[in-house]
Image 1: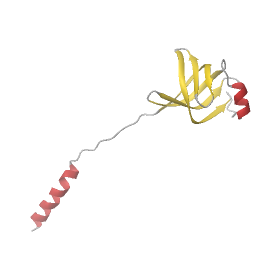
Image 2: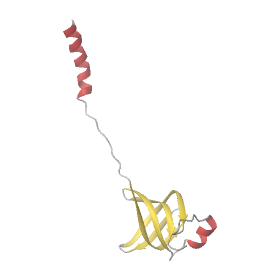
Image 3: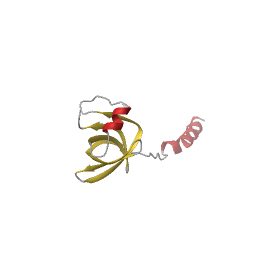
Image 4: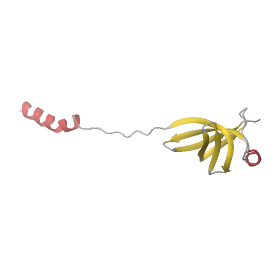
Amino acid sequence: MKKLILSMALAVAAPFAWGQVSETTTTTTTTEGNGTITEYSPGSTIVLKETAGPKHYRFGKHVTYVTKSGKELDEATVRSRVRVGAPVRVHYVGEGDNMLVDRVVLDED
C-alpha cells in the first residue's frame, strides 16, 4: 500500500519537477550624453550635437532641469535658458532604441 501511494505521489510530482521554466529579461541602462542643443521641443524631444554626431532623445514623463552645481531650475528659468545652442548634459534611461531623458543639466550656472 505504501509503495502504491509513493508511486502515485511521484507520478503526480514528476511533471512539475522536470517542467521547463522560461524567463523574459528586459535590459535597462542608465547613462549620460552631452553636447549642444540643435533642436528642442519642450516635453517631447531634444537633439544634441555630440562628438559622434547628432543624437535624438525623447523626454520621459518627469524631467528635472538643474544647473551644473545642482540647483533645480523653475519653469520660467527653463523656458529662458534651455534653448538651441545651449551646452547641456542629459541623463537618460535607455530601453532598446528608446532613450528617455529624466534629467537635463545646463553646463552653466
